[in-house]
Amino acid sequence: MTAFSLKALLRPHILTLMPYSSARDEYTGKEGVFLDANENPLGPSLSESTAGDSQFNRYPDPHQWAIKQKLAPIKGVRPEQIFLGNGSDEPIDLLVRATCTPGTASGSADSILIMPPTYGMYEVSATINDVAVTKVPLTADFHVDVPAVLAAIDDTTKLIWLCSPNNPSGNRLRSDDIRAVLEAAREKLVIVDEAYIDFSVDQSWTSELDTYPNLVVLQTFSKAWGLAGLRLGMCFASEELIRVLNKIKPPYNISAPTQALALEALDHAADKDTMVREILLERQFLADNLRTIPSVQVIHPSDANFLLVQFTDASGTFAQLIAHQVIVRDRSKVILCDGCLRISVGTRAENERLLDVLRHIDSTTAPKDLPLGTAEVATKPELVSNA
Image: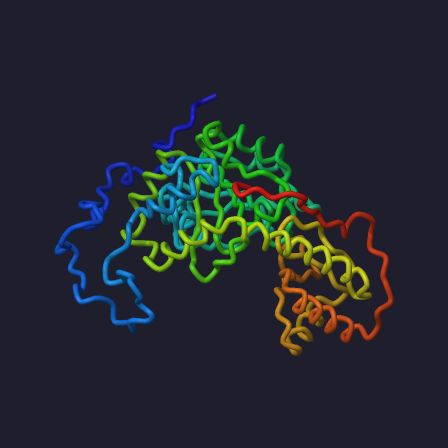
C-alpha cells in the first residue's frame, strides 16, 4: 500500500506559494514601540468602559498561540496540530482550496466525496470552488455504506467527508466504518467533522492523529461551549497539513476579541461540561414528551444537541410552529429525511413551549406507540474535558 503523501494531494502551486508575511509574523514579541503595522496609535474608537484595557487598535496574534497552548492539553494534541478558523467553515473551504484544482466540476479532474444527508457546507465549498462532488448516501439508518464509499473512491478523489455525530440525523457513525474508510483511503484526506462530539458517548478521533496522517478532525466552539457568536472553529491534523492551512489563510483570521473570549472560555471547561449534562437531560425530556404527540411518527436516535423527528405532516407542522414563533428546521426535502423536522434542544421553558404548541396543533394528547427502537436517545453518563 502506498504511503500517505500530502504533497501528492496538494495543488502544485501551493507547494511553492510564498505566504503573506504580516507584521506580527516578523516580530512576535509583546513589548516595544510598535511602528510596523500602520495601526492607529491613539487607541480604539470605543468608549472607555467598552474598551477597558484592551488593545483593539493592535492586530491580534495571527496564529493564536495562546489559545493553542491552552487548548492542546484539553484535546490531547500538540499545539502544532491545531488550526483555528472563522468557524469550521473556514478550514472546510481551505481544505478544498489547498487540494482541489478549480474548474473541474465538469471535467472531474479533482473531486470530493460526501455522504448525504450531511452538513451542507462541504458541497457548498466545493461548488464555490468549481470542484466536482461525488455523493454516496448513508444507509437508511444513517450509517456509512462502506462498500459503496470504497467503490466510489477513485483517482480524482481528494477529500472524503464524514460527519459524526451526523447533521441532520443526529447519530454517531460507527467507529469501525470510519476506520475502514481511513484504512482504505490512506492516499486521501479523510475529514471527520465532530461539531457535536461533546454530546456523544464516543471519544474524539483526535487520539488517532498520529496513527493516520491522512486524518483531519473538525470541532467547534459553537455548540457545547455556547460561543456560536464568536465564530471559532478547530481543525486538528498533522503538523504538515496545519502548516499548509496557516500558509493559505488570511493573515489575521481570528479577531482579538474572539481570541480573548476563547481564552477565558478555556478556563471554564467545567462549566461547559455542566451545560452539556443539562442539555442531555433536556434532550431526554424532549424525546420522552414527543412520544406523546400523536403526529410524531419517528424520533431518530441522537448523539447531538438536537433531534430529527418525523411527523405525519412535516410541512404543515413546520408552518404552524412558525406561526406560533417556535422555530425549527424543515429537513423534509433532504434525502432520507422524508417528513422530518430537526429540533434543537432548548431550555426547559423553550422545550415546554414547543410541546404545548405541538399538542395544540394535534388537539389531542393521546400517547402514540412508536416503532421499536426508533425513539431511543443515547445518554452520556460522564464527561471529560478532552471529549
